[in-house]
Image (cartoon, rainbow, N blue to C red):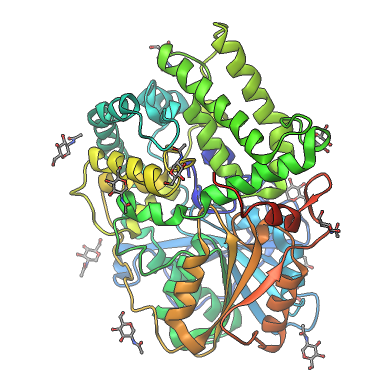
Length: 563
Ligand SMILES: *[C@@H]1O[C@H](CO)[C@@H](O)[C@H](O)[C@H]1NC(C)=O
Ligand SMILES: *[C@@H]1O[C@H](CO)[C@@H](O)[C@H](O)[C@H]1NC(C)=O
Ligand SMILES: *[C@@H]1O[C@H](CO)[C@@H](O)[C@H](O)[C@H]1NC(C)=O
Ligand SMILES: *[C@@H]1O[C@H](CO)[C@@H](O)[C@H](O)[C@H]1NC(C)=O
Ligand SMILES: *[C@@H]1O[C@H](CO)[C@@H](O)[C@H](O)[C@H]1NC(C)=O
Ligand SMILES: *[C@@H]1O[C@H](CO)[C@@H](O)[C@H](O)[C@H]1NC(C)=O
Ligand SMILES: *[C@@H]1O[C@H](CO)[C@@H](O)[C@H](O)[C@H]1NC(C)=O
Ligand SMILES: *[C@@H]1O[C@H](CO)[C@@H](O)[C@H](O)[C@H]1NC(C)=O
Ligand SMILES: *[C@@H]1O[C@H](CO)[C@@H](O)[C@H](O)[C@H]1NC(C)=O
Ligand SMILES: *[C@@H]1O[C@H](CO)[C@@H](O)[C@H](O)[C@H]1NC(C)=O
Ligand SMILES: *[C@@H]1O[C@H](CO)[C@@H](O)[C@H](O)[C@H]1NC(C)=O
C-alpha cells in the first residue's frame, strides 16, 4: 500500500513493518512440484533462516493446480510454515496476515507466540505465502521490472515518487489544477506499467493470482493436513478478512473456527469500483486515528513526545504538524526538486497510523528528521531528492499487492486517471483530509491492470455456516473501519459474534488486549462466543502509546476535537 492497503505492515518500503494493501525466502524441505492432483502428504523441514529464523518453526512446500477449473494449465506450489501445537493437538489453524502481498512465513516468525497463546496451544498454527506472494511460492511475488534502475527511471519525477501536493481538505484550486494536469502523464505511466507486467516473465501467472483460488488453496491445505473434508480453522487479518469472507461463503460446510479481524466489507470489495469511490469508504475513521496520534503526543508532552512543546494542547500539536506539511507543500511548489514533499510525509504518516506501537519511535526519529529537512529546504538548503519507496532505491520491488487486489476487483477498465484523481479530491473533501491524497496506493492501479483473475467471488455473503465465526474490529481503524466488521456480522446474523476493541490502529494486533486474547482463546478452545449484538474490549491499561499515556487516556481526551 504504497501503502499497502490491507495489512498490518507498510508501503513497499515499509511493508516489512506494517501491510492492508501493503504489499521471503523459504527453503522448505518437501516434495517438489509433481503432476499429482491427489492430496499429498506435507513433509516439514527446517525453514531457510532468511525467511524465518525461529528454529521452532518448520517449513514445507505444497502443490496446487494453477487453475482449479482447468488442471491442464499446470501446477504451482505454496511455501508453508508451521508452529507446532504446544498441547494435545486438535488440528490446524491457518493464518493470513493481510496485505495482500505480505509473506505469511515472515509474519508467523514474529506472531507465532501470540497466535499459539490465543489458540490455547491446541492447534498447529500454519501460515503460507499465498500465490503471488514471496520468494518460494510459485507463482511468487509479481515483478514488472528487471532492475531497480529501470523501475526508478520509469516513474522518475512523477507523483509515484513524490506523492501528491495538497493542504487542508484539497480545496485550493492551484493544487486541484496541478493534480488534474498530471492525469494524462500518470495514465500513460500506468498503461505502460500494465504492458510491462503482462510482458514480464511473471505475466503469464497474473490471472491465476487471486483470492478465490487462494480460498481453494486453503481448503486443499486443510484436506492435506487435517484430512479430506475436515473443518477449516482460520485467522485472517486485514486483507485476510476478504480471504476469510470468500472462503466461508464459498465453502460454508467447511467452516470450523474462524476469526476475522480488521474487516473489509466483502460485499463492497469486488463489486464496487475500489479505485474510485470505493476506497474512500475505508478511510472514514482514518483522521480519528491521526487525532489519537497527536492527542497522545500532547498528553505525553516534550518529555515523552519531543515534537510537542511544554503546555501544548492537542490542537497545538496538530497545528504544528499541519504547518510542517504546509511548509513542505509550499517549498515543493516553489522548487520542484525539493528533497522532501508533503505528499511523501503524508504517505508515510498514513502507514504509521496502522501501528500505534511504533508512534513513539516515529516521532523521535523520522518525523523529527522530516521537520529538520523541511526547515533546511525552506531555507534554500536543497539536498538529495528522497523517494517514497526509500528502501527500494537498491532493489526492484514487486507489484504483488496490486496483482491480487486488481485481479480480484470489478473490471473497471473504463475509468481513467482523471476519474481516479477526482475520487481522491472528493474523498479529501468529504472523508479524510489527512490521508485520502496519500499516493501511491494499490487500488489506483486497477483501472489499468491488464487482467482479472480467472475466478472471482461476488457473493452472497450470508450463507448458512457449519459453525459461527468471530468478527473483530477496532473503534478507530485507519484502513478497515468498524463498519466493515459490523456489516459482515449483520449479514451473517446468528452465524457471527461481533467484538469491538476500543482502541486505534489496524486490526486488534495493533494494540495489546488481554480481553481480545481471552475471547479468541475461549472460542478456539471451547467454541464459546460472546453473547449480544456487540461486545466491547479495552486495550491493556498498562500499554503506553507514549510514555505515561495509555489508550483510555487518549480516548478520553479525543471526543471534543475536530481534526
Ligand atoms: C524472526 O524473528 C526473530 C525474533 O524472534 C528476528 O530476530 C528475526 O529477524 C526474524 N526473522 C525474519 C526473517 O523475519
Ligand atoms: C513438531 O511436531 C512434529 C510431530 O510431532 C515433530 O516431528 C517435530 O519435530 C516438531 N517440530 C518442532 C520444531 O518441534
Ligand atoms: C485449459 O487450459 C489449456 C492450457 O492453457 C487451454 O489450452 C484450454 O483452452 C483451457 N480449457 C478451457 C476449457 O479453458
Ligand atoms: C531522474 O531525473 C533527474 C532529473 O531529470 C535525473 O537527474 C536523475 O538521474 C533521474 N533519476 C533516475 C533514477 O533516472
Ligand atoms: C475539512 O472538512 C471537515 C468536514 O467537512 C471540516 O470539519 C474541517 O474543518 C475541514 N478542514 C479543513 C482544513 O478545511
Ligand atoms: C477522462 O475522461 C474524461 C471524460 O470522459 C475526459 O474529460 C478526460 O480528459 C479523460 N482523462 C484522461 C487523462 O484521459
Ligand atoms: C522518544 O523520546 C522521548 C523523549 O526523549 C522518550 O521519553 C521516549 O522513550 C522515546 N520513545 C522511544 C520509543 O524511543
Ligand atoms: C464530496 O465533495 C465533492 C467536492 O469535491 C462534492 O462535489 C460531493 O458532492 C461531495 N460528496 C459527498 C457525498 O458529500
Ligand atoms: C442473502 O443475501 C442475498 C443478496 O446477496 C439476498 O438476496 C438474500 O435474501 C439474503 N438471504 C438471507 C437469508 O438473508
Ligand atoms: C473451556 O471450558 C472449560 C470447561 O468449562 C474451562 O475450564 C476452560 O477454562 C475453558 N477454556 C477457555 C480458554 O475458555
Ligand atoms: C491509564 O491512564 C489513566 C489516565 O491517565 C490513568 O488514570 C490510569 O491509571 C492508567 N492506567 C494504567 C494501568 O496505567
